[in-house]
Length: 144
Image (cartoon, rainbow, N blue to C red; front, side, top):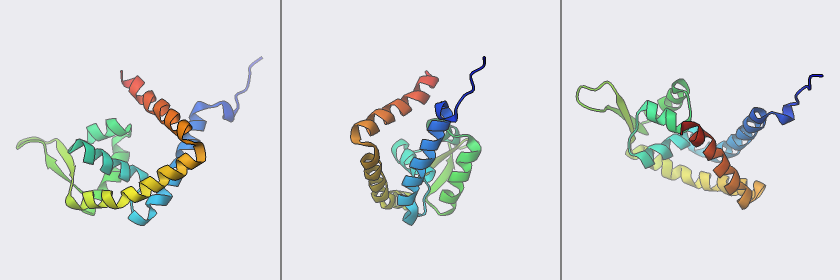
């Protein structure tokens, strides 16, 4: 006899459902800044990296390049980041934050702290720490 699966036993369903819920929670807190959760993460990544190519950002964020470019375009349009060739004759572009991007990031951090606090209130600090470590280990394990 073939056992039929239940959606509640599907790891992909559970992770995607939780990801949508958490993304909505964070985006509610970012609403006043005009940033999405992806855009906030991009600004933080570039702040920490200093500069990065599309490929480096896509790899770090585990995003396909098309989705990444859609997130970058409004940030570039609004002057929060710029792209520069890697070298004089290079076609490879490196992205970096502008002063406006650093200001937008600083403005958005308050919303991030509020989202973090709400999330911890929902799941508890120990669960939040454990789950984050487990989730970060998934793509790290795949890469090694």
